[in-house]
Length: 162
Image (tube, rainbow, N blue to C red):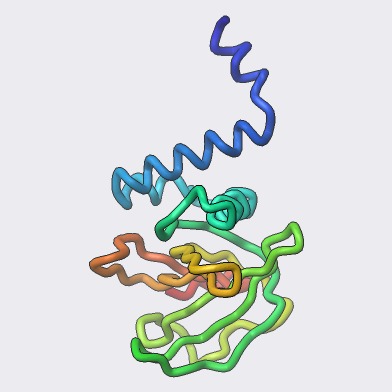
């Protein structure tokens, strides 16, 4: 069987599984490859596949993601043990919204809130999944750390904050 025939026989779910396997391999190989795996434009379908893999128990460990959508809610800023944070919820399609965490002490941005309900947003960061009620995307700023080597950002209505 030739390679062309194999590619044509792949169903969308098999292609999604292959894309997820490629991302996981890239993440294990290092953040430079992980950055390439998430790509320069948002991929909400990829995010939803990653989220589903966490919920199904087949995936563990934080994952780089690039999502976009419409802001459906904005929370007030809160002070945590790691500083001031702003939170908003992004509709990524398929009836799913995800919490976006912005480290306000590390971001070059105006005072919170710099995002409003109805805005469009594009977010690169670290997807964490503790359980269905505790998940979100953080590391949405320019910094990196010992446990996360990929800088992130948030673009709101075309204005980039990081």
